[in-house]
Image 1 (spheres, rainbow, N blue to C red):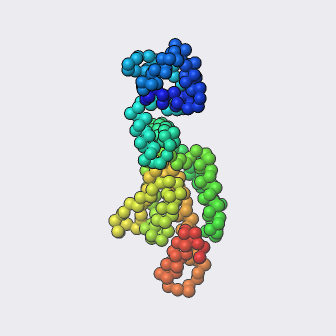
Image 2 (cartoon, rainbow, N blue to C red):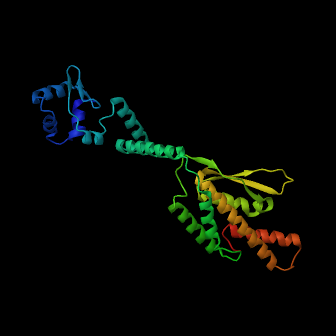
Length: 273
């Protein structure tokens, strides 16, 4: 880095910047500094060494220098500037982004390395408490209110995370295949999306009447996904059976069953039909 660029970076470009530099380095004479600047001498900011043809060291004010980024070597500074130009941002913004990314990676690695057990029973208890307010006669707005309150409490209690390095798989959630086809698959996908996870459908043999779903994501989030999806599917089954009972005998059993499933499907999608 040129000595003149160093002085401009650390002491500013306004009049008097060289005087401030000399004040911090009383062993350097003004005429020496003038000769060095005219000769285009360079400085290693990380060490404070002025090199070729002289070998002198200067005092680097750490607070100002760190803010100006002068501790970077010439090569590294050029690489950062090149990255910043490619992204159409300032060098400071690029450095801040890199530091924030490294801090986040460090935080996530610490999370992943912790041996803290996932509080399954606590999550299950909170989920059950919220869903106890719903019944097969609840309207869509009540479902929305319960889910909003549930996610808020889980988040505020530190039982959900949206930045994680600790990826896990939930237990298998068993859903009857017909229910999965009509509404269970939709519920599993939406719950997973809501909590930043993936839902994975596990194919079973055609002769088996069940489907299995697992959730993949943060270790705590997948537990919440499991219990929320389980409660929603149980409640939707109760909705289907209650609606089916109310219809009487206006059609064949197959027609009534399909109509009940369609009604439940519309409810799961947010429409009471």
